[in-house]
Length: 497
Image (cartoon, rainbow, N blue to C red; front, top):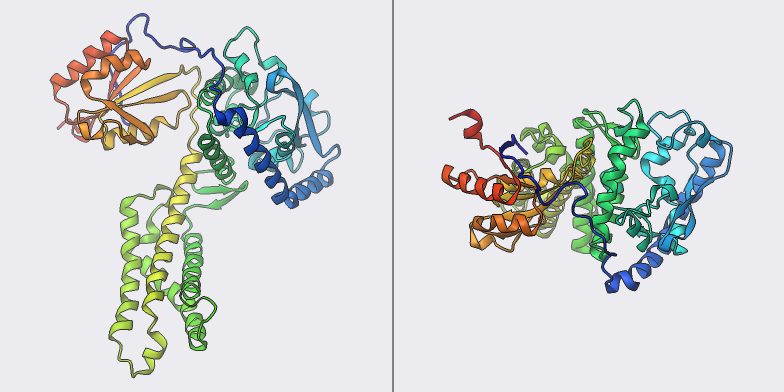
């Protein structure tokens, strides 16, 4: 989020530090928590078991064929109300592996079965827990089930985890979905996991306990499914899907994906226009354009340098270039339809119905934009992991609700120990509005009160138009309230102009 410079040190006795603002009350008892969450879990887990039953049977068969031992691994965990239960997973390690090494499993661990690494990277080993959810021992979303020695009864925060069913997925498991790669960088992976990962997981789980809702659960389930496509950190020149590496800069792969979009767009446009009553002549025309139009569109994309873009960084400039390429081809089709002499033989072949041209254009545009947006989303999810050693949890207030402030908020979301409190901005039209999911809380003059009320640890100034006098006023407010202030420089300040 740019170069950040300290302008004021935290005052002694700053209001929020690691563990200082412990939440010591049970999760909010809403209608959803009281009964809706369990109903949602029951229906969703039952549907999941039915839909995924072929995949479950295939995984069970492969586990049996590739290694000796039981198909399922069972481990005693602590559930709702402190009651123990056996969490179910497909076995990914050899028999007796728990006696041959630490609990943390890193990539290339010799204890893994031939199939174990793949099951772990794709999270398929977790699917049997749908049975735990169906039986009421777990929830689809919630803090991951802990073993007994991971819960300290004297810790008021950790003891609250037994007030909600443990879950298959959670904020913590999403943020730390690459924890094996992180721990593998250290000589003692077990210590790295204990000292760096577990404390941050506890913070994230506590955040979830205080914001349980149906919308939250649906969001986390959706993100979990997406993360199946990026189960590990790929090398810079490849993308990883379902545990396999594919060239991410390969133009041939990009063109092949888009060719599929264009073929589908032509076929679907005719189907939508004529439903099942497609006249015989249009059968032949559709077959011709299913072949010809994708070639034309791919050639136009090459002409407009569309395949020189890096899909993972897809942005509005790239979208505009792609839109121009797609629009030019559709304009050519429309010109043929309107201006080609109707008596010519070419007209009979190349004059597409205007509704087909319009629908094919929209489908092609939406499909190509969707491909790139999905690739960028998967990339961002794959980068959404920054467990910093010993990092205390910090709460940020951003000064300036503009493009620079938006960049700060998006960057902060990648770090599990950073929490965006909101924005301040002197534009009254922005007050109460959301930017990147965070609220614009008020004008600059309210900074000191907001720091105290919302336990802000750091104020990030991202308004390039602020005069020196305004910066000094903000620094004084932050110093009086005990928060650090940082400046995100603009390009003029970086270049010294």
